[in-house]
Amino acid sequence: MIALSNVHRLYRSDEIETTALMSIDLTIARGEFVAIMGPSGCGKSTLLNILGTIDRPSSGSYRFDTTDLTTLPEAALAAFRRDHLGYVFQSFNLIDDLSIEENIELGLVYRKVGRAARRARVEAAMDRVGIAHRASHYPSQLSGGQQQRAAIARAIVGEPQLILADEPTGNLDTENGAQVMAILSALNAEGATIVMVTHSPSQADVARRRIDMLDGRVVISVHNAI
Image (cartoon, rainbow, N blue to C red; front, side, top):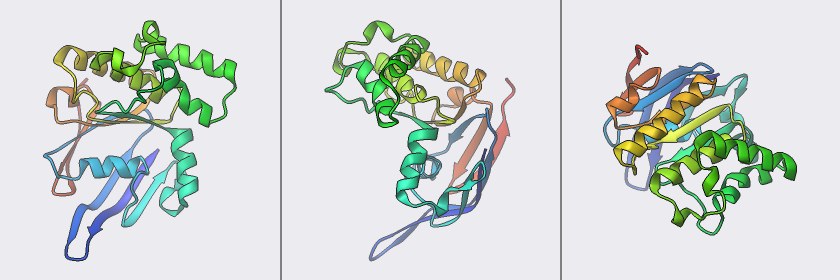
């Protein structure tokens, strides 16, 4: 599904050049649940941003199925993100002025999904994460755990091929963090491909494979015994 080949990412200013990623070779199969770990500044968020096409490699290739995404113009990448990816962020990134239902529905509006189909898919996504009873509420009226469940519903409502989660439990207490991890694990069991950045070894153990990074490189890739 995903193949990165000799990917580098450099950031340049007038006075300094910083290497965020070096010689990354990585494959992720359809249906995997991969956790990326490492100390702050090791490149894991940069790697996730490249997988999500928010950032581009300075060199190397990124193939998604048969398409080399590094060759696509920005408009095509935006369409790719809309149609194939779902995102879960540490800070939830819900729109304060929209209800939970409207937040979840928004991506389907951009995809021009019909109203009846949108309603059915939004309801199914809310039921899936246990947030349907909060559909008419606004983000500020929800707890952190409820907001993250709404964010997961938003990520899955478009039936993406790949879900990218950046520290999805970072702003949650232990109980709510465990609930979010249970949802992600269940989604993976149903066939979703998930790549998650985390600082938590216990949460990385929920994934099927752990990738450890250091100084912009992949140093360990190991399959968990699940």
